[in-house]
Image (tube, rainbow, N blue to C red; front, side):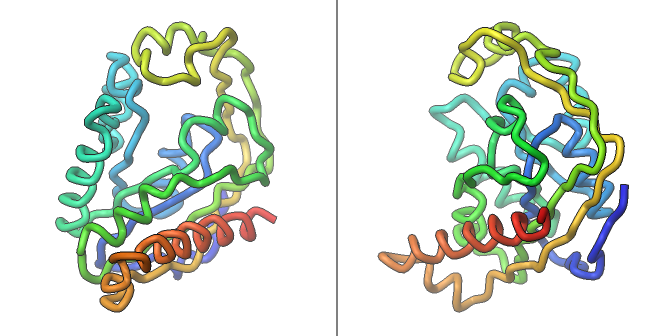
Length: 217
């Protein structure tokens, strides 16, 4: 693993780390690349599978709750961690790119939950740090985990309600590029209201997506 632009990592302040996502080992890679303890928002099913739950929680993950309680639980847990000046890591693409085996240099659509969290938390000195995981060599094990098995643990996930299996990608050689942090200033906090709120969220989401896409080129 080769790490670039480490000097961009914020020191001594809370941060939301966002990254592209293609493999189940991305949390390990991201933690090693940033060199900090990260608290990960992970998929609901990871908190339901006994052995997998133990593994992901040992790496600081907090699995999503049931869909009806998910937004409230996510914002509450993540905000408390940021107030403790910790780093919260989020994969805005969700689980889709892992199941569809997207190319290493392609970034999917970002969900905007991390941007709402950045503005809604009200945490001072908050940075949003985009990080790109770029594969140089990898090995793919197609259909390694039956999707029907995952469906038993999380029947609410439509991605698991189909035939086939969950591929597993193991990186052999990778670059980790640290992007330029986006600081949530008091002025930006004030913009997160009314009609301005949507633009603030769009700007932050687009910034992180473009920063990661450029680093993967």
